Length: 386
Ligand SMILES: NC(=O)c1ccc[n+]([C@@H]2O[C@H](COP(=O)([O-])OP(=O)(O)OC[C@H]3O[C@@H](n4cnc5c(N)ncnc54)[C@H](O)[C@@H]3O)[C@@H](O)[C@H]2O)c1
Image (cartoon, rainbow, N blue to C red):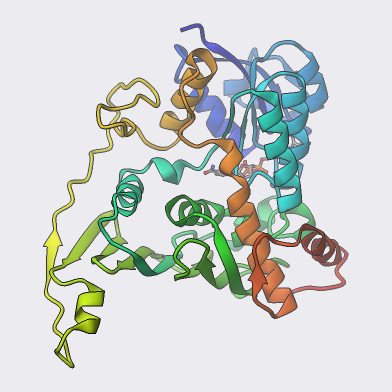
């Protein structure tokens, strides 16, 4: 396979990580151009010898790249990614696709029109446990889902993290706090597992840091399919932090915590217990050992379909995502994390913020104009959390 000629726009923490990852896969990629508005970023040893630009439009016009990774702060993702697609380039756009769902819509529409490979970087979809949860739900092993509970507090960030760059933790710079930066990964899993939402009621707090955006969020979604509640809590201020998920269905309960998955299968289903003769029914369960696929560095064909139709899970995270993108570009392999699905995490985040500031339950689809108007007021300091 001819290595894909790739450019990176935004060579900060994530862009540098992409640069290292791509250089470690010379059979799939060659990094042909870099772009950053801050020329200091080109001084890192990994950037030596790579042509660089301070304006992304010059990189896009250079003819040096077939694919670009967009790793700038989120408010300019949509504009840069759309410009790249319009030039006929393939794109991997960092999460979140945008700070507002209206901008995410515009990007998704442009990507669909372009016919180019358009990926995003929700690495958590590739983790074996998360894939397993998806297949147990899709196979109906839990039965009809009754509720889900998601606590995502393993995102500890220090005050120094927010002070590092002025865009962090500001409405203007990132359009939100934990909801825009860390929790998009968790919100994407909610979409991947449960699909679209019907409504949400949310509450934001700035509690642990000196920032203007939220560092704590709690919300209750009602799903569109099944109308069950999904409680969601995230923050960037506790230690050691918890990444815990409970999904309760009529046939059993799934609990994921600390890299373990417990599947408690009911011998009698919830409707059987509810409708049975016993006033205080005892729920007999059996803990089912669900084999968890090993995550290893074994070489695999990226995005390769297994005999059962699933994806090879021997690699996870960024190496998997990037290899999958390379084979999507060269061989037309389907994307494991299609960028066109990235709107959901943005819309879920915007909906929670809108709910907080309107003190009301927000219905989906979110009113784009209402959210844009709110964000404008937040950026202008006319509204705020503190
Ligand atoms: N997928 C993941 O797990 C993951 C992890 C970390 C960050 N990210 C995402 O990556 C993006 C960047 O985050 P980061 O932590 O690397 O930020 P960062 O501030 O370290 O890097 C951003 C870089 O973009 C540059 N930049 C800003 N505007 C630009 C423009 N118009 N053109 C070119 N360069 C520009 C900045 O100078 C900076 O060097 C964010 O959207 C973040 O959400 C994703």
